[in-house]
Length: 447
Image (cartoon, rainbow, N blue to C red; front, side, top):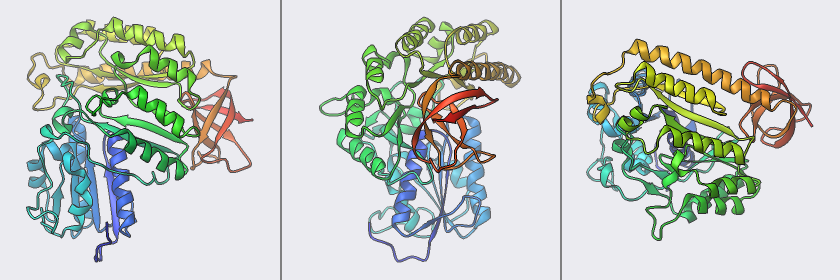
């Protein structure tokens, strides 16, 4: 892309929601930097603001609206580009709250964010490449992923690599398939190209991410698989550590676990959504497994990879969730050797089947149940950290130091660690002996 003859020179980006959004925002920043832009904090005055929104919960949608208003208050003359899931499902609401100049870019058109930002200072402004002035296509019929290359994740040791977009599951509570469309995969050669680019830029760890990563490759011709992709990534960049974002319980095969054991650069860390420990609620959610299957899968993970960190998503207060349903969830999680929980209260999303269900759970009850599970989350983390005291783990050291000047980073199995060092070991993988448990991390000794 050739540089535009423009006086606009500063960009601010705000990102809400998932790792996929973070990966896409990194691509926006890379492209703007190539255009000669300086990246500014979102709170400061900028010429262009890009807001990558989220719509998974009502709170995320409200935060998206707040960011739009904030950008326009900070600099009323700035061009504001709104993209992401909230922009996809509620474009009219954005138009109602926003003042010009503003452009809305749908999820199928994210490769046009730069064009939208530079096209002009009027809403839905046309350009020579886009005479209609529209950056919004029907996401439901989108068959290919937008190509959003990223040069680097500025200021981060860990990079995110988006290999897949969209979801075919249509869980009854989830707005994502309506906002992201059907499952679509990036070709293996493009994935490998991006992975090599990250390695060349000095990133020591890459997180493989997507909306439904386990479906990677099923839409390609010829079809591929996530496991095959991971094997190729591991071989192509042997000095890069790899992690996976969420995988459905049904997608964690023995072959995948055997690969994790055998591959030196694949981290012993899995994130597996449960959502509910009640079979009755799982069926109403249209999840594709039962609680017993989830238990079996986690137990197999721990048998094959005893040191593995296992994170779990839980959705609390789904319509019709009784106290007994909630207790089944609590007891399942309490008795499993898991590492941490991501706990979310159910949020009614218009357009989803669950929004119309009877017996909606009160906000008070949801808040009480969330608090109970977050307390369990704290206990699980502490128990897991304590179980590794005295062990030596490889730690990827972050570029920023912790309070008190201690170096900080994460072990291969995702334990947050801090330690003293007289030399600069930032963005390096170093051996650290875990010595003493603190409230939210472990103190260690650099070996």
